[in-house]
Each structure stands twice: as C-alpha cells, then as structure tokens.
Length: 124
Image (cartoon, rainbow, N blue to C red):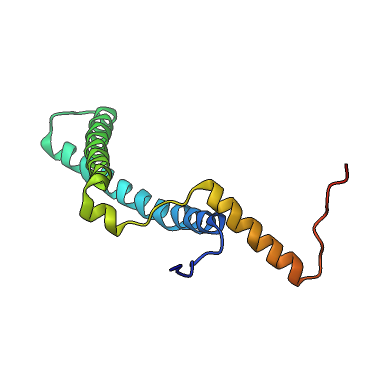
C-alpha cells in the first residue's frame, strides 16, 4: 500500500525545509539566543564579580556556550533513541537514492508524454 506524498520529489521537501529553517527557525533562535545573552550579562553584572564590561560579556558568552553544549548533548541523546523500537516504528524511513531516482524518472516520463515531448534517444 502506497501513501500519497505531500511533496512529489525529495528535492521539493528539501527546499521547503530550507525555507523553514532559514526563515522561521533562524529568526527564532537568534531572538532566543539574544534574550539569553542579555539575561546572562545582567546576571553576571548583578553578581558584581567583574568590573569591566568586556569580562562580563566574555563570562556571559562562556555560560551561553556551556548551555548550548548541554542542549546539543541532549539532542544527540534523543537521536540515539532512534534505535529504541517504539521510537523507530513511529518514524518514517529515508528512501534510498536509487528509489528516488526511479520515482523522478517515472514522473519525468509521465510529464514528457503528457506534454507531447519525446525523450531524446542516443545514436550509436
């Protein structure tokens, strides 16, 4: 049983995911990172350990880097859960490149035959 795909080819899906990543996710992450950096700078200034602004910013960036490392480790651990059976059975498998090529060739042939174009044949 074959289900209808949302996008006709894998490249359409890559394009849409690129638009979402660059347009929405990058803007959100920049905002969250900027807010967190301002919070860390204010927190470091309130502690009163450092007197000059450059060292305050350096400590805040170091703390933000540590938090991003911890979040990255958590994401990698979640990716390792792919080997757990309940998680693996709910995820869709990535199609093989050979199958993608076959699907694209079938669609190309279907489109070229419906538009009246004949594919060019090689002459020996």
